[in-house]
Image (cartoon, rainbow, N blue to C red; front, side, top):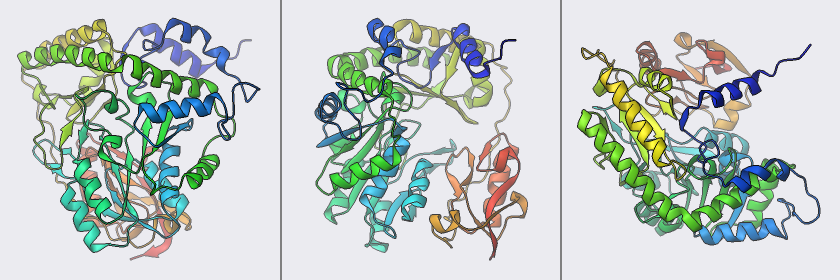
Length: 477
């Protein structure tokens, strides 16, 4: 009897489909690696033997590779991460803050930020990003919202900023840095989707160029690197390096993968050697694809027309599917049948991650598939649902850590009004939490996310996909 390998078989099935990947990781099924690197990568899966150094006490090639990364990305000091940007977010927040400290937190931050607040007992001062009601799209935060938060909470340590968001939208990071630094506050940046910014003047300004104090990049999202590989960069003396190192030793594996570290070294060298030309070539190919889409009548994000948005990542392709009379979910399924897999879809659009590993064949094939999908659409179309969005931030009753470590029970969402949320609950779209740990659940918010679900949106934070959510037991307001 041969025992099955369901995950291996699923991955082999995906490979056999020969799908073109417009999703992470940025090496695009190995296209971004040289043959020599691919041929030897499995043999690079070693441990801390003499000659290959130790991530947690680097003195040799790892230390030199990190030094080269700091030069390449414009940092004072850089570190390799093998537990993804999540471990970098934990390190960044816990390294800048002490238990009980307050930080400005936009509601469109990655969920790892809430994990860091639980672990470090950090208190959030929430601000809302702007919202495009016509297109049902969360955009970015404004410098004015940061100034307002600072005036109300002058005791904050600083803020964390997402730059860019999943749609490639960037706020005015330079102005936000200036506002914070004028009051000697720290700017921490989740630059997970922007590791490529520093290598081309055609990209939005990077965190380094904007003067961030500390930032994290997911190398695997847009560079030729393996999933779970990331960089942590320190840019100013406001950050205590020794504390950063100690926290990384806590939140990262004690058995770091040399394959991941090797890919970080490879990605840095690749971008230094070929990144500028690679980005130029990618943008030229994307320009041709966008020209084909425009000729068809398809819409996509290509202008800075939103409040809070100063720049757009021109390598991120976000296609409006509502203009074709179909949801993003439907369009994703149709493209998959045509041999294209996107990164993500929502009710109104498709999000495609493009990288320097996308060659001419891939971009031409994408244009062909989109043309076929458009021509095969139901020309009568159908109305995509709309729903009311409220951006009132719920009342904070407990800190995220207090809520997380309370006695928790599960209750139906419909019966949760007045309870204190113990997790993150929301809908996608718009893709930001409606209720965060420690917040009072209100009827308006329940109605809002239930309405989104009824029209095809997805709820996150529910237990096992059902309609129960975690709340603090024996605490009802």
